[in-house]
Length: 78
Image 1 (tube, helix red, strand yellow):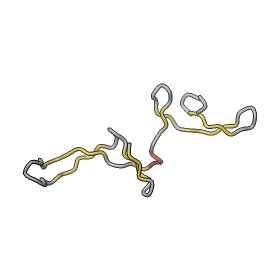
Image 2 (cartoon, helix red, strand yellow):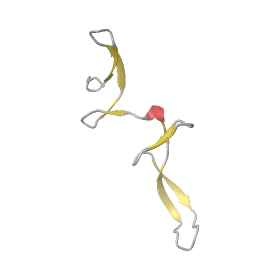
Image 3 (cartoon, helix red, strand yellow):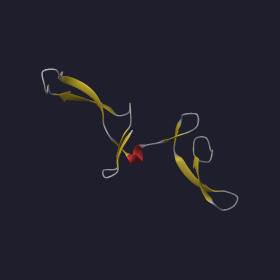
Image 4 (cartoon, one colour):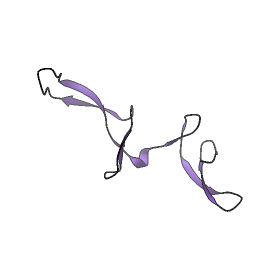
């Protein structure tokens, strides 16, 4: 995973694969259609639960009145 803080983009391995036509640069390089990972905006990332499922994050107040984050799919606190 690579993060670009200035543009607020992230490159995630195996996600958002695009095909790009690449030119042959040297005699050893091959040209043609290559599949590369494209960046996605940080707002499109999702949190993974302990089971490996993607979920959204919510906020709630615990019994002491503290604001805590929780996974909306499972309800567990983060």
